[in-house]
Image (tube, rainbow, N blue to C red; front, side, top):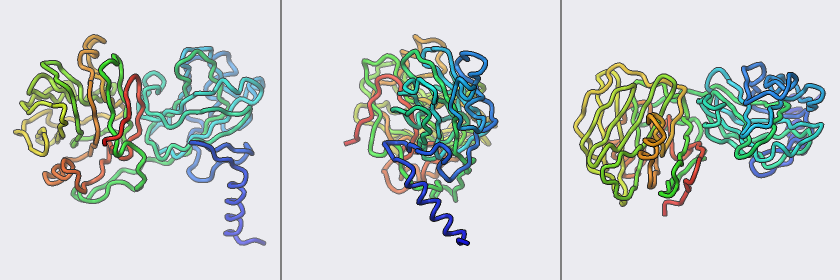
Length: 401
């Protein structure tokens, strides 16, 4: 009888032999074999979709634990021919998703899934289609099962959608391989704040929001839910002349809460949170770039802005407030503006880079280190070096230099 370790070696070799690696995904030759690692936590969870073609195509068919792939036999979901159809599973709480494994329809129509996107995040709005993208499905064979690596993206909702066209969306199984997100601890803000050292985000890059684009924004995914009573948020911003125009710098909105940072007018900036606002007189933004941090804590409400490493006067704001989780974080677009006209007026035009957010107030020296790009604690809510994001509209990812 073989020793247990020998079985593990043989199983690993078998998995490598029977899997074909391609850009961003793994094609599984034998549909009965799935990647070994995190468990599939989607089976039996709540699901929904943009529409249902008929009774046998209900959304729950994609999370019944079966890899059977005949829609005619009732194995798969199917929407009507919707514009940008979607399917979504609610995982009940936030998970770190290592991979999403999809089984395509096997009795016909395998090309319909071409161009579909896998999205992961904490917002259920519009079927989760506002959440950041894990992967795009370039093509799948008839009845094929394919694994898409998501590298620990965090979120409660996993969505499959086909953007930009009218199409039927049919899924025979969606496996979400994940584990509960691990709350990140820190030692006075000086210790490393991630259990993984893999950089996957925008290190060495900037997001460029172009002037001619009238509705462009970037949705960013937090590493952990925003359920905080204190925070530090830092970012570098470059803009052209703004006159007295209001400009959104950061926007977060849930069903119960909001957190926004706005350049209100020349020399005036505002922090809006939980329906209350506080204003600061500060040096204005410029085309040469400005480094900005905002700190706030609930116990005393102490709030401050930092511009290029220098702190403003401290003010008291929203004592005892808690920023609620479950919202959408966005760059370039004011989600809380009352109408589209105000959203257009406040849209950001310029460049944003080096965005970090922590669930605690950084020490003064740490903020100096962030400004001067010295060694500093990794952001445990947002970290530019490992940021998951989804671009809508005309926003370019450009190198810093």
